Length: 323
View 1 (cartoon, rainbow, N blue to C red):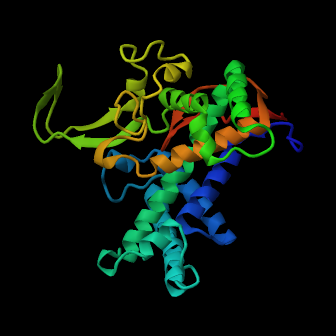
View 2 (cartoon, rainbow, N blue to C red; view 1 turned 45 degrees about the vertical axis):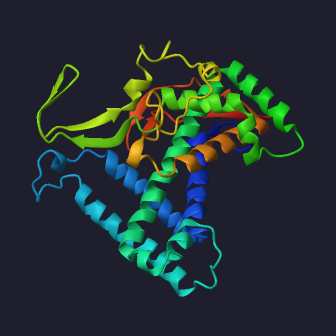
View 3 (cartoon, rainbow, N blue to C red; view 1 turned 135 degrees about the vertical axis):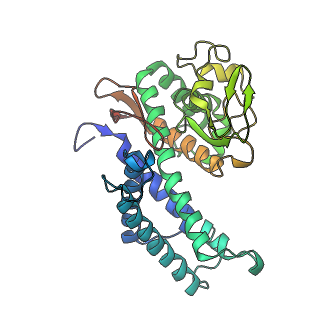
């Protein structure tokens, strides 16, 4: 704010989210590796959203936009950098003993359960790649709604003040005592689910009718969570932002047991990082609201764009005023 007079939240949340997930996965990461991994994640997002003729015409010689070449280069970088971190940790296990990061947990598995380095690279990269954008994107959507609905902001800040006061930071153990803040997060997950098409892809192995819809054999079906969360027979005034709906129904779980709102998926393929992601978003949101009043720096555009996740088409710009 002091430098620009405006806060572009996306860059801040992405940087913080990357730092957070790298500490969770590796515990400690050198600054050069951290920067390189950040560039690689950005490259991966660009490649996923880029139009590629080969997706429609699977001919090996088609690579007009260089997607195949860039993907090959990126895969090599991932194997090199993440692989080197694994090897370094193995060579210095005594130095890192007692670590509570995910890599330490993998390396401490019994010998018969140990994963190969190739498998570990794949798992760690998946956690970093998917665990960085979702937290940042969801926070940006929440703050956009907070900026637009000043009455909601005032109400949740009053709740935080009554629970926490002004003499200390919001802590993890405060979150269960902030039901309205939790309701805001649920309502934004309903209106703007970061993963609108859940990765519950299923292949029809024979012709089948689902209700009145004929699904021929060979069809790949996916769950459209965005459509479910905007369906008027399930949700009253589905396009309105009303956190209060979750105060009236405060026992609705969003962890996959209630399919009216399952932004992390459900069943065996549910998102493994759902608890970490939700806890991170709730804590960061509480701290942002505890310290600052947020005002629009320009008209808020709620237009959506679908890349790897459902993002705001135009980055949110706002003003942060110390409380």
